[in-house]
Length: 194
Image (cartoon, rainbow, N blue to C red; front, side, top):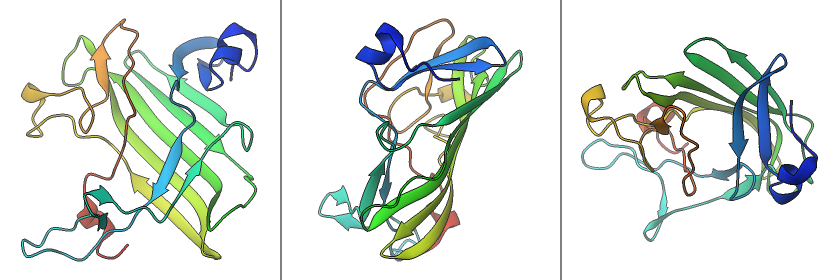
C-alpha cells in the first residue's frame, strides 16, 4: 500500500508506508526525489584484466537516464515480513515510452534484514533491478544485482554503513543519508562492452 494523501504525502511526494497485509512494516521517504536509473556501459578489460565502467573524464559516462516520477508512474508495493527480515518489491508497469532511453516495466526488490553483520543493526542485504527498456529504438532487458558491499574486506568484522558500502543503521533508528548510488559490485558478471 502507498500513502498518497495527507500532510506527509503533500510535503514529500515519495513517502511510502510499506505494509504486509494491514500492518506497516517500514516507512520510506525519498526526500531527494523518485528512484532513477542511469544507463552506463562497461569497457574493455584493462592490463590487470579488470572490467571498469566507461568514463567521461573523471565521471561515469551516461548514455541516458530515467526517473520513476510520480507524474509518469505509480509503483505497486508489496512486502513479506518475518521476524528477522522484510522483502520489499516496487513494481512499475506500463510506463509510456519517451526519449532515446525509456523504461516500460521495472521491478526493484530488496531485503531488509536484522543483522547479519551486527545483531543490533538492520541491513539491506540484497537489491536487484529487473527492467524492460527501450534504447535507441531497440528493446533491451536488464537484470542487475545491485547488492551493496557490506564491509571494506568482505568480512563482517569490518562492516561499514555508508555510500559505496552497506545500507544499514542501528535498530530503531530513523535513518537518512544523501543520495544512495547502487552499482553492480561484480562488473565481471556483466562482461565487457555491456
